[in-house]
Length: 278
Ligand SMILES: CC/C=C\C/C=C\C/C=C\CC/C=C/CC(=O)SCCNC(=O)CCNC(=O)[C@H](O)C(C)(C)COP(=O)(O)OP(=O)(O)OC[C@H]1O[C@@H](n2cnc3c(N)ncnc32)[C@H](O)[C@@H]1OP(=O)(O)O
Image 1 (tube, rainbow, N blue to C red):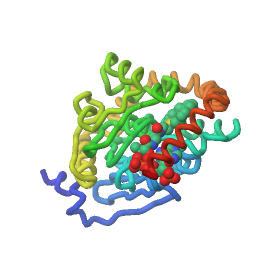
Image 2: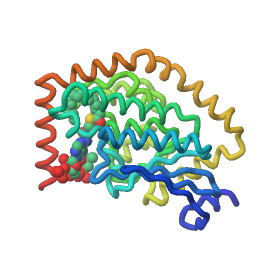
Image 3: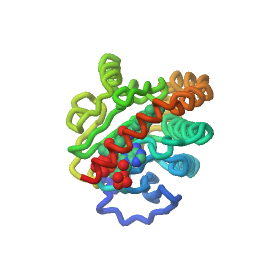
């Protein structure tokens, strides 16, 4: 089809507009109107306060610019996002912890509640907060030999209900419950089998192309009707989240500041560092 050919990134010589923050860059293709939002906080796109603020402002900028869709991807070659920055949770005071969690909530609601068609080109690992971002989108294409999942219970943490919403939208209840209680990280292949991702792709370019094709499927649908229909599906989760969002911050701060939890974080960080030195 002609319009799908135009969407092919490799062949595309259409002018693009660029916007960027310290840790994100956005390219909006003038022909397709689709925005590619790249996360670029080396080495693993771990989510600290500044990164989350950048991500939030990029998402709203894309939404306000009346883009035709949003594709979330990573500028890193093997990690989509490693989730919350543990360095910002470890030895942090209560105010810092509260700010971090509030910004994570803000990004999630911006993406999950976006009226635009959203897709994730998952070009690397996506554990915990990385999976949260990917599952807030409507479509996922992922590279082989990576992992994705909400591994909170493996870390002794209970993920709040809003954090599970994306999972619950995608997976059958029985599977979601099992994966969440196990804290399971799915390999790409397992994720496809479970329905957590939509496609396995061989390169980032192919992931972007699949995402563009997905967004292209709405080309002939009235954008407002599409958006309101999408949000009707998500309204109950959003409403429930809005009711508890302040208490949720307090609960997180109270849990994350406990000395025994701080100890778990410290040990976890040390293991990560040991592993990366090997
Ligand atoms: C984890 C918290 C533990 C306890 C918390 C308890 C209570 C807190 C209460 C509630 C929190 C609930 C919220 C949870 C949401 C989250 O997102 S928590 C974060 C969970 N993330 C992970 O478990 C991922 C950890 N990372 C990895 O598994 C691997 O790094 C990954 C597979 C993503 C990539 O592997 P690889 O390419 O081999 O890279 P390296 O492992 O070598 O890492 C490179 C450097 O990056 C540092 N790093 C990795 N992840 C993080 C991170 N999330 N935060 C900060 N830093 C990270 C790693 O240490 C290396 O640094 P170095 O080069 O050694 O300096």
